[in-house]
Length: 291
Image 1 (cartoon, rainbow, N blue to C red):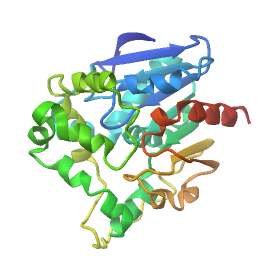
Image 2: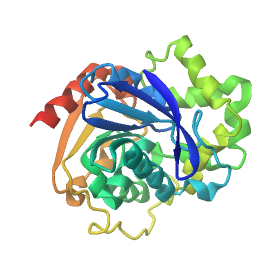
Image 3: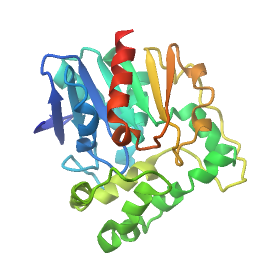
């Protein structure tokens, strides 16, 4: 792994790189509450590719503005587009997103399809089916109630207390957390403790347009238009079936937004499939790219 800082749209970002410098580029976009180093498990199984993983804005060693509006999805998409233009000369790359990184990956694929040759998502959601599921008041609404806690004005104090004990507990609630060794946990806590980073991380949730009610509450939310949120390039969705935060219903009907969708389910894994089954995930991606 190599690390360096890069300037994107006049702001500093921290970048990790693995693999073959001359290989096809995979832009890897992490989610909450991870950072660019979280992709090491997957990158180790993709040696023929040039894997690029930034700390996204608000995370790790990258720029972390404190204003909520700085975390609207269009800003993160602009970061990703600038990175592709800087590192790949504006040529289309493979984009791989997980969790919140999936939201940025979808946004880039929709807004700048010229920069995305293939879209890979692991346990992440397109805004169309996800907003519908969150508005229905059913199982996904219940599973997503943690969002209210992360949007709360007092979330920084709550989740940073006692060495980030509650944030680490939220990270692994009802999921297989055996991959989180104490050594790895120390690295995560060190990233979270950087000045202003926890606020930056939480602001992703505060700036999100996703509307979420209480369990059992059906909300009248306009549907996400399929013509404006279309994924036109080949798209692979990898799903750890034990995910308790994002449920299968959060992707129901995704085909209606996609021209070419392939679904692969991974048994014995949950939301943290990238850490639990890195070799299987990497082989799935390689096999799909070769088709």
